[in-house]
Length: 93
Image 1 (cartoon, one colour):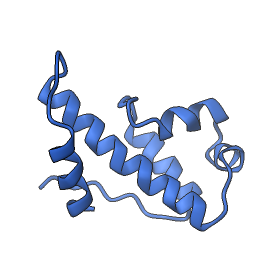
Image 2 (cartoon, helix red, strand yellow):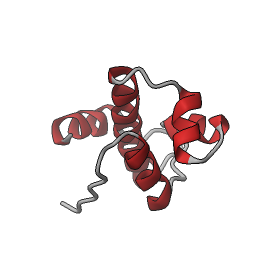
Image 3 (cartoon, one colour):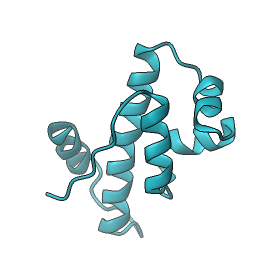
């Protein structure tokens, strides 16, 4: 994930009124969203099935997969990890 994250940071330089913090948040969310979508494709999991496994709505899954929507909780990340039979790993570097 580090190389992908670094590439996204370099692509997402602050423009206009976007702050560096927001830009970094969007970059991180894009990486997370990409990882979720890749796993969904690999396991042929639809948004509806993922929502059912997470105990949420398809609209919530759409927000989860939206890289511009940076409002995501650790609880939601844990739910999606469990729904994908994965383990959540959060790390400060």
